[in-house]
Image (cartoon, rainbow, N blue to C red; front, side):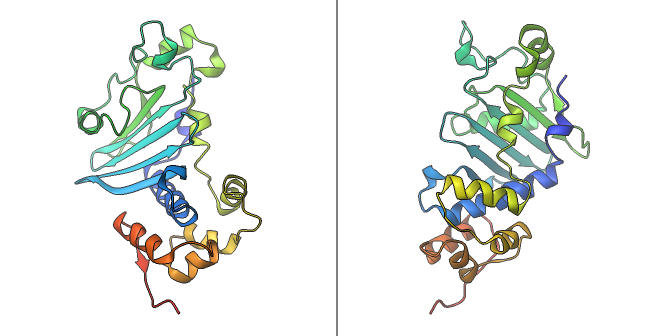
Length: 228
C-alpha cells in the first residue's frame, strides 16, 4: 500500500513550500494562466489554498485550515479518474471519512476546486501528523495495477521542488531561461521579504510594481522601495 507520509511532508512544510513556489511563479510570469504553482492566503476566512496546474489537464489543490489540511489531486491519465470509468462517477470511497470541516470547504468552492475531478485525496486532522486516506485505496489496490494505485500522487506532488537547485532546473526548462540566479531563488526559499531588487534579479523584464502588488494581495511580505 502507498506510504503517504513518505511521498509527502507535514502540513507546515507543505504550506511553506506552496507559498514559496507560487511567489516564484508570480515573479516569472505576468500571465496567471501560464503559472504552475498558485497560492491564496485567504480563500475564505481561516482557509489558505495552494494549487498546482501543469497545463496538461492535471491539477492538485491543498486546503490549509485551522482544523486540518486536505490534499486533492487529479491525474487525467489515471484509471481512477471519473472520466476513465464507465459510470463517469467519482471513484468509490474517494471522500470517505474526510472530516466534515474539510469537506464543507471543498463543497463550498466546488467549481474552483474541481470537486468531481479527483484521483486521490488525503488529509491531516488537528495535531495528528499522519496522513489519512479513505477506503478508495483498498479498492484501487484490489482492482488496479499496483503501480498506479496512488492516483497520480507521486507525479503531482513531484511539482513541489524541495530546494532552490531543483526549482532552478525546473524553471529554466519551463520558462525557457538561459540563466537564473540560484542565490536569488534561495532567498525566496528562505522566505526573505520580497523586494523590487530581488524581483529584478530573478526576472529583469518583469513589471516590478505589478508583481509586488499581486504578491501583497496574496498575503506575502513585501518591501517596496522607490525604484530608480
